[in-house]
Image 1: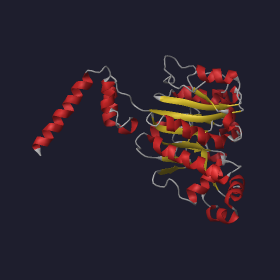
Image 2: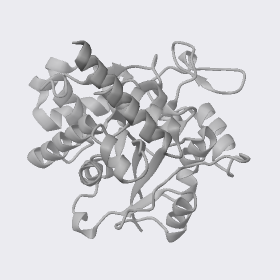
Image 3: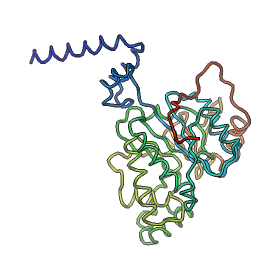
Image 4: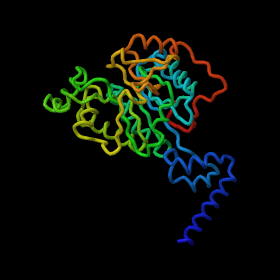
Length: 335
């Protein structure tokens, strides 16, 4: 046993010595002590590349038929939060050249949705195909993936910090309402009929506007959603289908982490205004009294909407001497 132990120690010091020859020892610390943030099999290949490469996180979204003014709060809030080690990837359709130029000017990776998918008009359907394709092409590039509705969401903090310790997760958020709510009820009944809806009607609504997962689990979910959308030939919002799959078919149970508005992501469309509180700086607090990382459906509360538009919707926030978004310019298909 002692002999084996000595071999391990010597091997470890050899690695330490080699790493000290690199210019950035701190990246080695990330690779050894924070495995969830790196490519697990990259230890020796990175010596060959003369550098260590930690995995990034990525924010994914769809922009369809929106003018610049509609997406300013979303992107300005990302700039304000000073995300690091994060790619921002947007799939666009029917948007102006000015919007595309704006996105590229702030470092967003932009993909034009192919005309091949013109028959799939709903953005909350086509997104699962786009996300699936993108993650399949970038399997080893990202640790955490966050898909989010662009028009009605904004950031107050780096959302990935809350999930950085998970090695396997699909994180979803509950709304303040049940599946007996009119829109969700109708969607599910059109999908599977009233009898199956009645079995899950008292469950809380799972929101599809914000989904966060480790890359493998998110890709698995995107595959399921795309295949089921094709199978059911479903004409309505993907949220009805997703709720049925989670509650009836019990998909992704082994990696599912469920939060409500006590957690880092708040979905406030069905929330009572008297349950929404701000701190002295104007940050929206979750139900535990902590600053929420992401606020979704803010535009359904008039007072909050006006606050956000005044803060993020008119001009870029002034941040001095900060790198805003770190990106790799390696995407052949981007525009």
